[in-house]
Length: 267
Image (cartoon, rainbow, N blue to C red; front, side, top):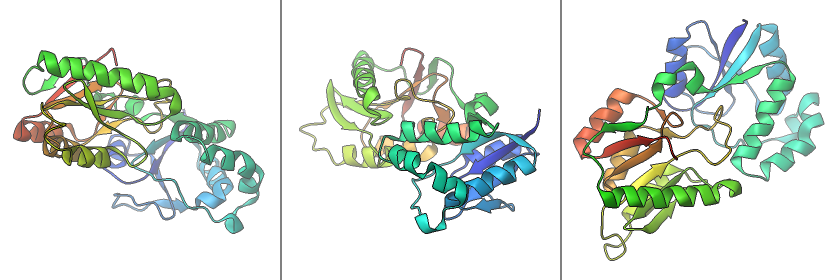
């Protein structure tokens, strides 16, 4: 087995992976925020060929994408020969959903003999087993709302839209889109009481057929606070397929705000 590299972006996840794998090399892309306080190896996305060469020269044969990374703004004038060669396919991938774009990026590394690993493979303890993680048992209404939200997610999956839905009393109050979970919950928090008459639930699960090695759904402490601000009773997630970054802080936040968290294996 060769060496692991972490392509690090914003958030606690890359820090946790690095702590669990101290021999891993940490790479970043220019212009992408990250929370590592240690020295990192930086490359430009426009010079992806240089990154590939550097990884192989350092004996890297495994790579994990970790952290929140937005779509980069590319400067075609800075493309190296490798990027120039793949540019037509890359442009096509950029015009599609996140899952198709990320699958294309994965294929580029795999063509170079570098295996892309999922964070959940390296830190399986960051996911939940089926059952109630924290809080009171969901009501029958909560469970029905969760079922409705799951049906919405399954229907939207082929369109590569989002990973989260809020349902209250059988009514869909919001669907997660490119803007992300925080934007969805902020939108729901502004819903008039006449439309939001019962607490409701937030359901988080991967898109149907999604490659979980990158862009795996994630929950953090801020998500719990935002769920509470949105007036929701709790969160239902896909067991084993949603990352819980910083479980102790999530548990504390859920207890503070009275939010239940339930993991199910049928989502």
